[in-house]
Length: 164
Ligand SMILES: Cc1cc2nc3c(=O)[nH]c(=O)nc-3n(C[C@H](O)[C@H](O)[C@H](O)COP(=O)(O)O)c2cc1C
Image (cartoon, rainbow, N blue to C red; front, side, top):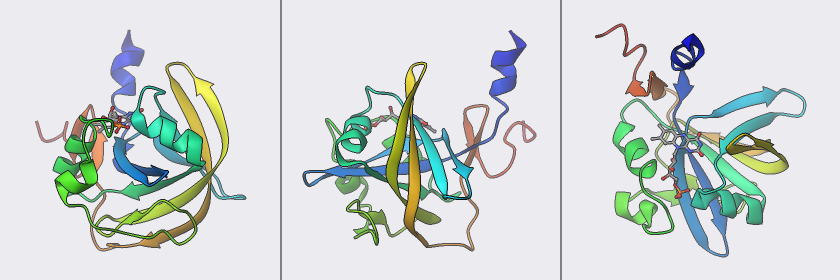
């Protein structure tokens, strides 16, 4: 089916989704993240219910989207292949955090930008759930650096396919 091949050519951002409940702060890598409205300012995440992060977002009603930079592929790999159920990813990677402005979820000190969100709605979508979040705060951390992108399941700066 060409659709399966074609969808792999949709470029993805690479972000860490931070969530926090009862003192437990966790981050997971997510690429199915995008802006979906100007007024109000909304973003959408697609999160599988089996992720540890899913329960933290569901219980707290908040999350932070930290946009990763082109030099953070290893962070994305680590946080996208281990679960916060078994590993404290933030300590293991030595990620520095500071309090969020508008949410209880801490934000990352090293990333392109942090987007602070409050959950407005959740919609089942196949094997994932779409969390729609209203942007209630944020910080631009390293605007001079390029974002980390993914294409065809490979991390890259622009177009990893063209470099083959
Ligand atoms: C590049 C990349 C992008 C990912 N994007 C998503 C995503 O958008 N939604 C999702 O549910 N899982 C996504 N994952 C998988 C989760 O990051 C992974 O299952 C993670 O271990 C879940 O962590 P947690 O159990 O601590 O929440 C992605 C993984 C990688 C490597």
